[in-house]
Length: 174
Image (cartoon, rainbow, N blue to C red):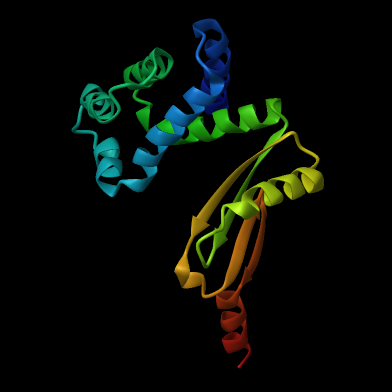
Protein backbone atom coordinates (compact mmCIF):
# COMPACT_ATOMS: atom_id res chain seq x y z
CA UNK A 1 0.00 0.00 0.00
CA UNK A 2 2.89 2.34 0.77
CA UNK A 3 4.17 1.94 -2.80
CA UNK A 4 0.75 2.87 -4.22
CA UNK A 5 0.55 5.97 -2.01
CA UNK A 6 4.07 6.97 -3.04
CA UNK A 7 3.19 6.73 -6.72
CA UNK A 8 -0.05 8.68 -6.21
CA UNK A 9 1.69 11.48 -4.29
CA UNK A 10 4.46 11.65 -6.87
CA UNK A 11 1.82 12.05 -9.58
CA UNK A 12 0.11 14.82 -7.66
CA UNK A 13 3.34 16.80 -7.20
CA UNK A 14 4.43 16.17 -10.80
CA UNK A 15 1.31 17.93 -12.09
CA UNK A 16 2.57 21.21 -10.68
CA UNK A 17 6.01 20.68 -12.17
CA UNK A 18 4.74 19.59 -15.60
CA UNK A 19 1.90 22.14 -15.73
CA UNK A 20 -0.81 19.56 -16.27
CA UNK A 21 -4.17 19.90 -14.58
CA UNK A 22 -4.89 17.55 -11.69
CA UNK A 23 -8.34 17.08 -13.15
CA UNK A 24 -6.99 16.04 -16.57
CA UNK A 25 -4.59 13.57 -15.02
CA UNK A 26 -7.37 12.27 -12.76
CA UNK A 27 -9.61 11.71 -15.78
CA UNK A 28 -6.82 9.91 -17.65
CA UNK A 29 -6.24 7.68 -14.64
CA UNK A 30 -9.96 6.91 -14.39
CA UNK A 31 -10.13 6.01 -18.09
CA UNK A 32 -7.12 3.71 -17.96
CA UNK A 33 -8.37 2.25 -14.68
CA UNK A 34 -11.66 1.41 -16.38
CA UNK A 35 -9.77 -0.64 -18.98
CA UNK A 36 -7.93 -2.52 -16.26
CA UNK A 37 -10.97 -3.38 -14.17
CA UNK A 38 -13.71 -3.82 -16.77
CA UNK A 39 -11.99 -5.88 -19.45
CA UNK A 40 -11.59 -9.54 -18.52
CA UNK A 41 -9.38 -10.01 -21.57
CA UNK A 42 -7.05 -7.22 -20.53
CA UNK A 43 -6.93 -8.55 -16.95
CA UNK A 44 -5.79 -11.92 -18.31
CA UNK A 45 -3.12 -10.21 -20.41
CA UNK A 46 -1.88 -8.23 -17.40
CA UNK A 47 -1.65 -11.33 -15.23
CA UNK A 48 -0.06 -13.49 -17.90
CA UNK A 49 3.70 -13.61 -17.29
CA UNK A 50 4.37 -14.84 -20.84
CA UNK A 51 3.51 -11.37 -22.18
CA UNK A 52 6.32 -8.88 -21.86
CA UNK A 53 5.55 -5.76 -19.82
CA UNK A 54 6.59 -3.62 -22.80
CA UNK A 55 3.95 -5.33 -24.94
CA UNK A 56 1.31 -4.64 -22.29
CA UNK A 57 2.35 -0.99 -22.30
CA UNK A 58 2.08 -0.87 -26.11
CA UNK A 59 -1.51 -2.12 -25.87
CA UNK A 60 -2.38 0.61 -23.37
CA UNK A 61 -0.75 3.32 -25.49
CA UNK A 62 -2.51 2.02 -28.60
CA UNK A 63 -5.89 2.22 -26.87
CA UNK A 64 -5.08 5.64 -25.34
CA UNK A 65 -2.74 7.40 -27.81
CA UNK A 66 -3.29 10.91 -26.41
CA UNK A 67 -2.23 10.35 -22.80
CA UNK A 68 -0.30 13.13 -21.09
CA UNK A 69 3.46 12.84 -20.79
CA UNK A 70 3.02 12.60 -17.01
CA UNK A 71 0.86 9.48 -17.23
CA UNK A 72 3.04 8.01 -19.96
CA UNK A 73 6.06 8.47 -17.68
CA UNK A 74 4.25 6.69 -14.84
CA UNK A 75 3.26 3.83 -17.13
CA UNK A 76 6.86 3.50 -18.29
CA UNK A 77 8.10 3.36 -14.68
CA UNK A 78 5.44 0.78 -13.78
CA UNK A 79 6.43 -1.24 -16.85
CA UNK A 80 10.13 -1.24 -15.95
CA UNK A 81 9.30 -2.36 -12.39
CA UNK A 82 6.73 -4.99 -13.50
CA UNK A 83 4.03 -3.09 -11.62
CA UNK A 84 1.57 -2.16 -14.37
CA UNK A 85 -1.12 -4.10 -12.55
CA UNK A 86 -1.01 -1.46 -9.76
CA UNK A 87 -2.51 1.28 -11.94
CA UNK A 88 -6.13 0.90 -10.69
CA UNK A 89 -5.02 1.22 -7.06
CA UNK A 90 -2.78 4.18 -7.90
CA UNK A 91 -5.73 5.85 -9.65
CA UNK A 92 -7.94 5.33 -6.60
CA UNK A 93 -5.30 6.71 -4.24
CA UNK A 94 -4.61 9.71 -6.51
CA UNK A 95 -8.30 10.59 -6.55
CA UNK A 96 -8.49 10.28 -2.75
CA UNK A 97 -5.60 12.76 -2.48
CA UNK A 98 -7.34 15.18 -4.85
CA UNK A 99 -10.63 14.95 -2.99
CA UNK A 100 -8.92 15.58 0.34
CA UNK A 101 -6.94 18.58 -0.91
CA UNK A 102 -9.97 20.15 -2.60
CA UNK A 103 -12.26 19.41 0.36
CA UNK A 104 -14.45 17.50 -2.04
CA UNK A 105 -16.40 14.27 -1.83
CA UNK A 106 -17.66 11.69 -4.29
CA UNK A 107 -21.32 10.69 -4.20
CA UNK A 108 -22.88 8.10 -6.45
CA UNK A 109 -26.61 7.71 -6.98
CA UNK A 110 -28.07 4.76 -8.85
CA UNK A 111 -31.70 5.25 -9.82
CA UNK A 112 -34.35 2.94 -11.17
CA UNK A 113 -35.53 5.51 -13.71
CA UNK A 114 -33.63 7.99 -15.86
CA UNK A 115 -32.61 10.98 -13.78
CA UNK A 116 -34.09 14.39 -14.59
CA UNK A 117 -31.26 16.91 -15.12
CA UNK A 118 -33.17 19.63 -13.26
CA UNK A 119 -32.72 17.76 -9.98
CA UNK A 120 -28.93 17.69 -10.29
CA UNK A 121 -28.24 21.23 -9.08
CA UNK A 122 -30.75 20.86 -6.24
CA UNK A 123 -29.07 17.65 -5.10
CA UNK A 124 -25.60 19.19 -5.32
CA UNK A 125 -26.59 22.13 -3.13
CA UNK A 126 -28.29 19.85 -0.60
CA UNK A 127 -25.28 17.51 -0.48
CA UNK A 128 -22.91 20.47 -0.01
CA UNK A 129 -24.99 21.65 2.93
CA UNK A 130 -25.24 18.21 4.52
CA UNK A 131 -21.58 17.26 4.05
CA UNK A 132 -20.08 20.75 4.55
CA UNK A 133 -17.76 20.37 1.56
CA UNK A 134 -16.75 22.78 -1.17
CA UNK A 135 -17.10 20.45 -4.09
CA UNK A 136 -19.21 17.37 -4.85
CA UNK A 137 -18.35 14.92 -7.59
CA UNK A 138 -21.76 13.48 -8.32
CA UNK A 139 -22.14 10.47 -10.55
CA UNK A 140 -25.55 9.21 -11.50
CA UNK A 141 -26.25 5.77 -12.90
CA UNK A 142 -29.44 4.22 -14.18
CA UNK A 143 -30.36 0.62 -13.39
CA UNK A 144 -33.91 -0.46 -14.28
CA UNK A 145 -33.41 -3.73 -12.34
CA UNK A 146 -33.87 -1.77 -9.09
CA UNK A 147 -37.65 -1.65 -9.76
CA UNK A 148 -38.04 1.70 -8.01
CA UNK A 149 -36.16 4.05 -5.71
CA UNK A 150 -32.41 4.69 -5.54
CA UNK A 151 -29.09 3.66 -3.99
CA UNK A 152 -26.89 6.41 -2.56
CA UNK A 153 -23.17 5.78 -1.96
CA UNK A 154 -21.14 8.26 0.07
CA UNK A 155 -17.79 7.32 1.62
CA UNK A 156 -18.43 3.91 3.18
CA UNK A 157 -22.15 4.60 3.64
CA UNK A 158 -24.68 2.96 1.33
CA UNK A 159 -28.35 3.84 1.55
CA UNK A 160 -30.51 1.36 -0.35
CA UNK A 161 -33.97 2.85 -0.80
CA UNK A 162 -35.09 0.59 -3.62
CA UNK A 163 -38.18 -1.50 -4.12
CA UNK A 164 -35.91 -4.45 -4.89
CA UNK A 165 -34.48 -4.30 -1.35
CA UNK A 166 -37.98 -4.16 0.12
CA UNK A 167 -39.08 -7.19 -1.91
CA UNK A 168 -35.94 -9.10 -0.94
CA UNK A 169 -36.40 -8.43 2.76
CA UNK A 170 -40.10 -9.33 2.50
CA UNK A 171 -39.31 -12.74 0.97
CA UNK A 172 -36.56 -13.49 3.48
CA UNK A 173 -39.02 -12.89 6.31
CA UNK A 174 -41.52 -15.38 4.89
